[in-house]
Length: 184
Length: 170
Image (tube, rainbow over all chains, first blue to last red; front, side, top):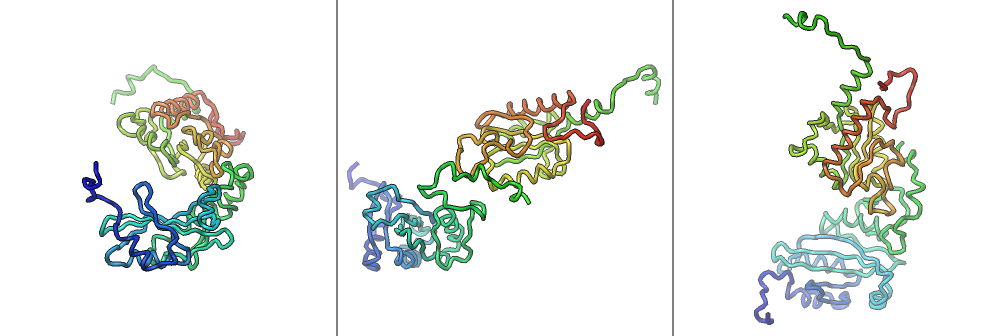
């Protein structure tokens, strides 16, 4: 199938989003890429809230639905680390537009020494639990989050289990599980 | 009514325990603790095709205080285990426990930081069902095995025989 014949009626990619974001936030955008037929923006973490706000409220783009907030630990991927100034984590936002049917991924590199991003709960209330999960699994704090507690692990759990340096079988919590106290 | 005349010379001798155990084994009331795909098989077991009511164990109670057979079907995490134990503690004795499937019995493929590697670390399990998930026939077999145990007058694993309490032994 040639380029002309390609059916674009069902495309989930927005043709204009890269130019619009680049023109609005020149310094904040670190990378624009298209991989596996999906659009992805890497942005500086100080700009990511503004970019998400712009993407949501812009009448033409209208990315009104926040599909997911999560994070990735890149500590074992040397190529990504060197590309983004050895930022260990990336906070990932997946967006969807009900209006246009387009999808978009926005990523923000976060350094281990300042492990915090501004919360997007003021844009999407549904982000509250998603950010709690990212906090629970990676230890990333979200500034001004209304209720930043662990969501999956027990409240007294120590460590962040989705970090790559966390052992799969745990640090002995299975063996030292304080059952009587938990049951009280 | 004439009934007295018919049973004139017929006497059945038995023990109270035998009668109680006969009633008990044919009306097990399960408490389902379904946390994963095993629970889907458990539902299939209770539905019309496999129909656990053929063996008198269809009265599913979601209240532990009204049930005497705990079916643990699925993964139990460190956070869930205290809940499961609390439910087990609330069940009146005598009570039996079925550990259904690989995850409940040994953690299954989830050899991870958060999963209990076998509920028998904390609960007295009477019957293990292997499989991932086990078929409904396996669950029916486990219920029948427990019925056989009750019929034979065996104590459930979780019971400490007490001289002052009414014995469940036949």
